[in-house]
Length: 439
Image (tube, rainbow, N blue to C red):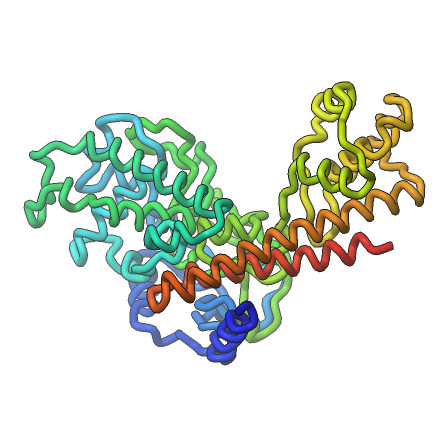
């Protein structure tokens, strides 16, 4: 069954192997025309293109040397708390303290409702109507996801809905759209707010609060977010090296590349050091061979593995207190590079706590100056932990495949398929981890 899913995945990728120019896309052209009318000037020769694997992104039609500017967006085209406070609906945002993202989400919903009457209509028209994060999946799909994902999805959704309810409480029955007289509570629906929240969550850029303070809205957090038209077309890569800043002279938001790009290649920016789990939950995509992927392991995982390997059945109170007081029960995980420092330290302490005095153990742990035989024993336990996690991941993946075939059937979404691909990536991480633990 796993092979069938893999073939489906390969067919989907092969169907989009060609690089397709989107330069004549109507919404993109309207976006650029609107931006040009408001002071934007294109930097370099970048064109929207549909790339295999990453989807829509920006392709350069010329060589870009390191240090060149990739984009510059005028300050007046940044959607911020300030633009929300000065909008037709600004009074709503001044009634109670709110989060920055709360304000921006409602601002986006209200401006979308205005349609052609909104200054932002061409930017909003370029945004995706469908968000592919699992938060928008059906309850049946969410229930079929592993607990690691479903618990985060449910918590995420619950937190956003709580913010939605708090926002709705500040809207009265007399609050109406000045253009159509529709009540604001009818415009600001749960679905619209969720859509806007995740648009901001995945597309907002960071702006220093000191440069983003010209507003009269009371916020409960730092005002450091803005939506920047055009910039959200850039895709993410861990290899991208960029510098983002506000120009001191004209207030524009600029991005400079610190790495060169060849002609006709895709140009990337860096969203942050995110694992595939975070990318999946908040952005709706994953990356092959993501260097930030880790598989957490617990103290019980390590302890039970050592017990089964060495027929030991207890950990002294002194040993456990040592582990806890030295923070060796945190950051225990496996990655493509092997075991985390805490994982190796934990294994070493459990293996040798009854053989070596505490002071020597402490020196060994913090210097990582293990003997060859000690490293061999640590790595042996590490390989057993890889086998344990591999069994767990395969079981969870098999459960998802079974749910797809038997419960979800034709209703399965791309988000659910992506969850299965995420766990396939975890199997790759474990294979690389196993290789790293081979002496």
